[in-house]
Image (cartoon, rainbow, N blue to C red; front, side, top):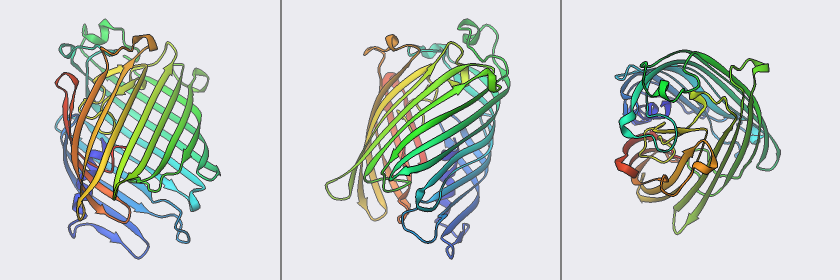
Length: 358
């Protein structure tokens, strides 16, 4: 959600309302937000973003980013939080994290890859969330990391007798998940916002365990592979493979894989399909048009399931689409993107966002 809301921040950098500290290479924006998304309706509030470098003495260190927002929507959703990614000198350390509070109504169609449109209902949750991910470069472009995550659901409400009750969804009452894990990362991308070449591969393994305070016990494994290639003149082909597996019989509602959203298989409401595991493959062809303007075409396919045997060609979901780009910061390749996507079974979405989908 926050990335969508930051769209208005970046748009405002075109005006004199932005505060920019150019003497230190730091860009700081604190501005009102008015935005709209499929999952939120109209949103309004205040948000801030800062982009900067933690090293003044080399050209290797990537741009760091910090975000903060307090936003309320016409769907009666509240978000207050801060998140960001810090690159230390020569990228020897990378720190990624989030601290947030959400009070949300959210659509729910049930579990599995065959949940029908007619099953849709609304549930509401209040959640405190924290995660931190510290990575250390051990060889060029190669990182080892440690992760920690806490998710505290202090309130969940839903209609009695609905799909929550019928499917006996785990996590229907307030609960907490606490997890810790490790990561292995290879990252040779040439840019933090919009890579034109390089490879990103990350493997994560986390354990959620009652011994460290979690109400549910399970393991989570993530594979994220991305490849960027320059083709022809100033054109880029981007490709991503994603696989998430939650292993165990105690995977609660808010830890399930969520299909769709702003950055994966656009055109589907994020969480339209939910399961213990999901996979998707998506690609994007990015091309300049004129000056700061560019265009893209993209496609993707994937699915969710509880077990590998639940996947089938018949249930496979897909989406295709295209969009426009406007470079708000050419040196950092930071783009505003406007995308429209069409998905299987009439799903569709219009997205106004900051930065590339992947």
